[in-house]
Amino acid sequence: MKFDKPEMHYIRCEGELTGEEMLQLSDEELEEYLKRIGYEQAKKRYRIHPDFALREIAGEYAIVPLGETQFFANAMMTPNRTAAFLWQAFSEPSTEEDVVMRALERFDGAEADIRRDVEMFMKETMKRQALVEVD
Image: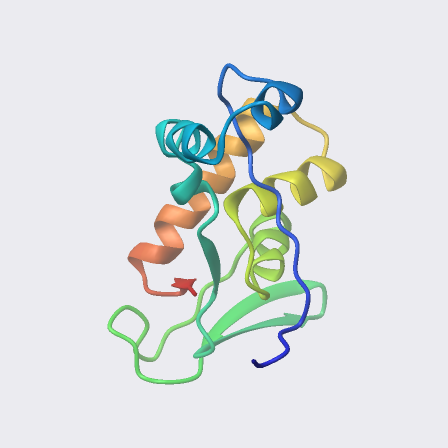
């Protein structure tokens, strides 16, 4: 068996049970509960596609495509500091919740707004094939 780098990720369980109550469930009951609250979706990990590089030049950020992509032939993106932070947060495989937690630690703002913005960032970067799901 191959030794993998240890990882731990945040997964938000927005169900009606507390951790103590979950411990009381049988394995089958816990499996069913986790399915019902969307655990499989929440544990998906994403990362920036390796064909993109974030550069900081004179205090400004630029995202440069390294290969031929459908969306960025002879172009680049210029993210603001928040988008650059999210880009960097997804430079390693991370769940959506991992990145939300990092953003909450870094920025002032309502949790609901930060969650919405992380979700929007993910949708936009996935649409442009810059953010991909990983195993």
